[in-house]
Amino acid sequence: MMNSIDNMTEYVFDKTQVNKGTAIILGSGLGDFADQLDNAVTIPYKDIPGYPKPTVEGHAGEFIYGFYNGYPILAAKGRFHYYEGYDFNTVTIPVRLINKLGLDHLIITNAAGSTNPKNLPGNLMLVTGHLDCTFRHGWEQPPVYTKPPYYSESLLNLVRKSAKKNEIELKEGVYSWTQGPAYETPAEVDLFRSWGADAVGMSTVPEIITAAEFGLPVITLSTLTNFAAGITNQPLTHQEVIETADLVKPKFKQLLESLIEELNR
Image (cartoon, rainbow, N blue to C red; front, side):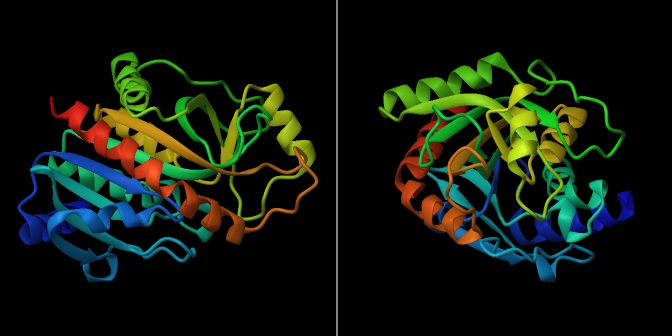
């Protein structure tokens, strides 16, 4: 794995010369943010030696390196999921590569289902904790992680400050990672809620865990695109996820821009 990561890193560095700045992993339907970067260089995942390819709609499968107001940004348009048949190490390759390149911060984004009736679809949620509900290691109730090395109060406060400055309503809560690819049942959602989950999705937690292993400062933002199963009587579709993410793009983009400014002060 390390030789593969070294080769991938060397390829991306040769194309970009990036060795500092902010990395952003862009989730379902959120890839457009990368299109506004100045002096952009596009690197398709398929061109990177040994790099896997996403198979899910809304995940373009490319790195975009460029500048926002002079600040270097490496954006990953598309990620890999456990349910696509990839193992944990493969799912976290983007984070390993970002760390190897020497970037300063990682912003992880995703589209998630709200399990909290007070957090309506169309809102942004700052992730302040996580649960691993894949049951990969057994059927015991998973712990909720809300402290360092996964969550930094100073970084969380930067996001809150950015949201307040731009008058963006920002929800906060715990993200629950499920294996997928099927959406959760109402019974599962009730269980996760009882454990403290405010949102549910099929990604992100491996990336948070891996960033923490490397000491890479990480911020996680969820776009709440739908209510999870059982919260309402509406059926769940991936198309709803993409459509709601599209509607949220303006404030998502505004928050990211402000956050990048704050991280570089």
